[in-house]
Length: 462
Image 1: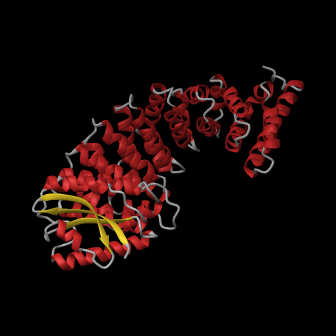
Image 2: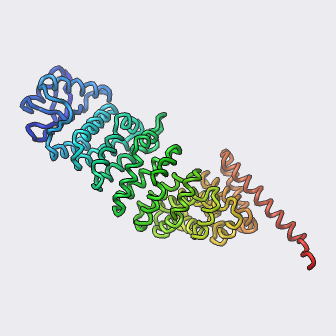
């Protein structure tokens, strides 16, 4: 007979039972019931070891559960009569339990969701369960989709509604929603379903109720960041006040690097190619909040990359925001980020894209970027990251939009740097397009300047 290792997590006469036992195939249930005195209430049961796959373990688990239920005639699952403290311990053990196989993990998740519903009035229980769901959601996109299908969003929303004043519940719930909203490689995207279920309104309410709690604000900003990465969610999050709440969090917690980084990423996603959200961010003083955060955390590369991306999203084809960024010394902030984090590819790429969008369709911006040493910063990025196609493309596109400063670009060796990028990345369509476009535009401006110098326009007679 096969011998299977089983871990039982249960309750007996109000006491928690967590015991590993060995079970022989064909006698499943008997040793477990004997150890529990025949009156075991099973919370969870996990099979380990000998089964060859997750599906096999799930089949063994369900078979053992059925025999236990048949012999003991007790309910399998969670019980409303279970003491709250025992439940708290049980869920902590369940969260830490070593579970193998996708099916087993989803079974555990459904038990957690049921426990949340059965013990909605227990704040400790809701915290433990939300943390368990957050950890499971972080494991894979398949788990995230299965959690949404299993009703996790509704259970989390109910917990947030029932414990509005409890910051621990709100933070744990936001954490679970944040992890469930991570990008998915599967065909089905969980982020749209999470927003449709009303999660955005709960997150917004948590941010309003706990403005002074830096942990709640940081986690909530992260949740809105992941949810708004899906374009279809941008509008609904903004209508729930998401833009203003993120800006308020950043202003209230300027010295917290996590709030600043997550807040900038949230604004970057919310405003990307979304005119109404760009308008809302401008009115909410988002530019000032971003620049202040970047200044406060100049040594933090994550905050700097996020800040550059946020300024890029706000500036993209939005003249009013471009002017606000320039007045707030946003160009100087971008250049400072690039200068202080030259080895960081993410910062250099984000900074170049931000300068590119800041210089687009705004004639006065090139001069201000030039004064801020923006051209030198872009060329330094190209020199430090020759092998990075992403940095080379963003740099070339920035130089193209800064071509009014063609004399300076030429003087600093910009045309040679672009040609090196074209040679190094001959197989990259993006680099080839960006580099050739930049050379054409820069050489055109150089030609126009030479013509003007040789044939100045005569001043008309007075």
